[in-house]
Image (tube, rainbow, N blue to C red; front, side, top):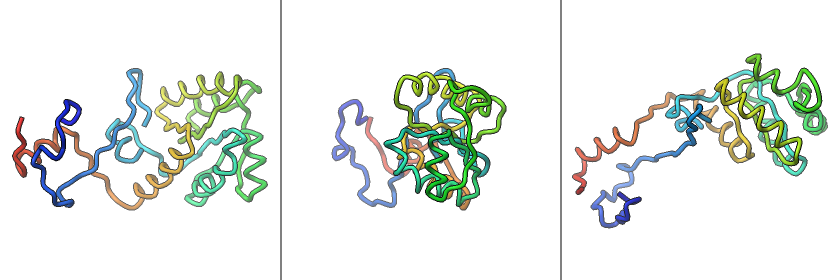
Length: 190
């Protein structure tokens, strides 16, 4: 109704904050889905609770990536990174294995994805080679149902979501189910 131009203030909704829920929009592509916590579950995908995380980040993102990747490591994930990223991580005390970028030879990130060895991918691409590699690995990740993040904020959200998934059960309701509940609890005018 808001998208149609109606104002929330004119809908007669309850002012009690305990009645309100949170809705999360997730990107869903026609050829598959890119899955975060409840949003990912609602898109028929989910975050891994264990396994390998592949990390390949642009130089400008490396400093900010350290606490995120360290958190994945502390949660028990095995870290695999492209050579430059791996060198940077190891230099700051984050243990990891190295893997080649797609254009550098084999075995590479794409090989690991296609073999099912990767459960989560963190990639912040920049540059011509990175864009070409990104297209191939993004497509493979989507096809294989591997969650894929291209921003550090999404990767950080993924660490939070994984911790939440480990410690509590999720419940997801569609907007239609939520609307049905609201219609019973609060009469909404059409």
